Structure formats: C-alpha cells, structure tokens
Image (tube, rainbow, N blue to C red; front, top):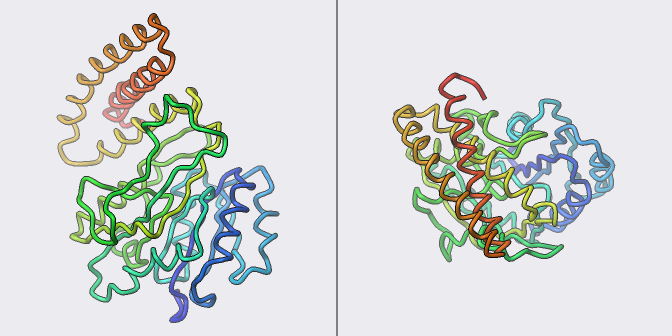
Length: 311
C-alpha cells in the first residue's frame, strides 16, 4: 500500500546493463525532490552481470534503491512486478540506460501531483538519443527527440510517449489492468509495444495523455545499437509485436489481411531498392532499404501466426 508521504515510485527494469545502470542510479541519487517522498526500485530480470553489486553501491543513497529479482523473463513482467511492489501514488518507469537532470522527477510528476480530478492517465517526458560511440549517417533519420509539443500539456492520439520515460498514477493499473506481457522484449527478441498498448488503454478509458518536455532524459545508444544487425532485428521484432497487439483488437482480420498484402509489395519494393543502391555503391541507402524490407518481413511472418493463435 502507498503511504501518505510516499508520492512516487521510480521503477527501473534492467537486464545485463550494470555500467549504464550505475549512471542512471547516480542521477536518481542527485534528484531535487523531497527524499522521503520517493523510492527507487531496480527490477533485475535475470541479469548475469554485476547488476546486484551496482545496486549495492548505492546503499547509502537517500533513498537507497530497493533490489528485486524478477525471474519471469521479459520487460513487462518486470514492469508488472514493479507495480506489485510499488508504494508510491505515482509510478515512473525509466530505462536502465538514461541520464537525468536533477529536476527530472519533479518535472515529470507535477502534472499528476496536481491532477486531483483524475483526468490524466499518463505523462511522458522527452527522450533525447545520445550516441557515445558515434552515429552512422544511415541510421540518423530514425533517432530524434520526440518533440511532441514545446510546453507541458496533453498530446494528440497520434502521439505516444516512450516507455523509457513514462509515468502513470497508480490507480490506472487498478482500473485498467497490468502490462501485456507478450508485447515487449525478453532475452532473445527486440519486441516493443507494451507501453504504447497501455497508453492506448488509458485513452480508451477517456483519460488524457500528457507530454512534459522539461522532464527530458538522455537515452544512451551504444555502438551495438547502431549496427545493421541490430536495426534489422529490431525492425523485424517491432513489426511482430505490432501485429500481436493489433490481433487482439476489433476488426483485426480485415486490417491484418490488408497489411499482409501491402507488405508483400513493400518487401519486393524495398528489396529492389536495396539491390539498386548496392549496384550504385550507396551502402547506407542499401542498408536502410534492407531494414525496411526486414520490417515488412516481420509483418509477413507474424500475421499468419497470429491468425493461428501463435506468438
């Protein structure tokens, strides 16, 4: 149960990113927010590195992070464990590789703390990708800040905040349920979409979704996330998770049937474009076209499986 004093739970699901996690926890230890009014949970999703030792390094922080081991593999299992363990009135989900400013938590929480009428169901902060190892030109167009609006306030339904920097009032989960565990990544895949699906549920319940640009975080993208291998696999698995999500909604058969046919054409078109770019020695353009082709292949792979009830 939440206590009257404890306003916020910051939940950090993590998997094998001990060095990045250390930087995130250091930023949380420097927050300009009343120390007795927030807690930090680190949900270790079966890491094999020094994650537990890194959490222990902050045992003298105020508040000291609370370590939890979640054995069920998957980001949304870790998120749901955080919801079960949280004591705060607001639950903030943060990635384990973000860098935060001292006022981050206050900026993100203010709209929900002031929302006595329960009109707001989620608040997302700005996410700024940073590349400590450099950014290849061919992936540049896929990495930019969200920039939904210049000031704090509600955003249109076509926009969805990122799970790397996203807050919900605790009562949302009591009213709408937990995260969909089939939609987000686990070891061995790059699924995504659990946060977007939850935001969609929030909107379907008639609640507002807000954006807080001043609650910005820097999202670290190491060299391993700017390779062709990563980009292609992420595109493929992201498409699969979108299909899984859409398969549970009304009108799925007609919609996904149309997407299947469209993505046959897209796969052929992008693959042809990649071949042409390769012939003309445009390596970056070839990689981009192949990533897009691989995303279409994700749709073609998953749509028949979803119709057959398979993940």
